[in-house]
Length: 233
Image (cartoon, rainbow, N blue to C red; front, side):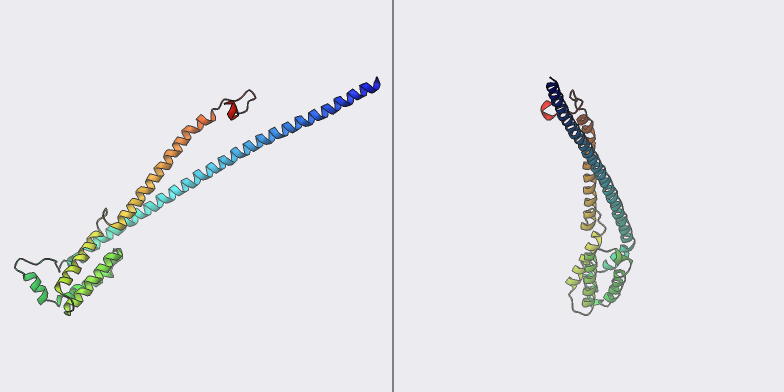
């Protein structure tokens, strides 16, 4: 009898030990799962905060760059409007159309020496304040006009070449002042508009995510107080 009682007690002790081991194992796995979930949640939160901060920094950086580009464009245009008038006046001394009686082109042919004065004046503007604000194509066209004027004075260039070069130089000079048409300025403005559209699209997505987040958090818990598994929802 005593042996039977001892055997039952031993079996009960063994079952208690096994049950305790299983309960501890389940508790450990549950706590580990909970810790892992909290860790993943915090990691995702940190990543989201980092991405938000990075996007905010990039947005501020682009805004500063856009502001600097606009300020540079304003300064460049102010300089051009202040200095291009004198350059255009010199270029206007060689027109690309004759007077009705043909006297204008005859006068150019007879007064070739005035090209030295015009070339000298244009050269001074090329390496002065006006030249600093010119686009490279405009500078090149002005150099060609100066060279053609000198060649015309020496009899090495025709009147037709002279008028054409001066006409092209005036066209390039005017294009530097056309804000909406000039390729460089138009490209800068398009880049600013593109950055603005990207910024608005990011803000729209952030707004939509902020609205959707509370809906995702309002999930019905199970009877154990834990989020329901996909199969139980």
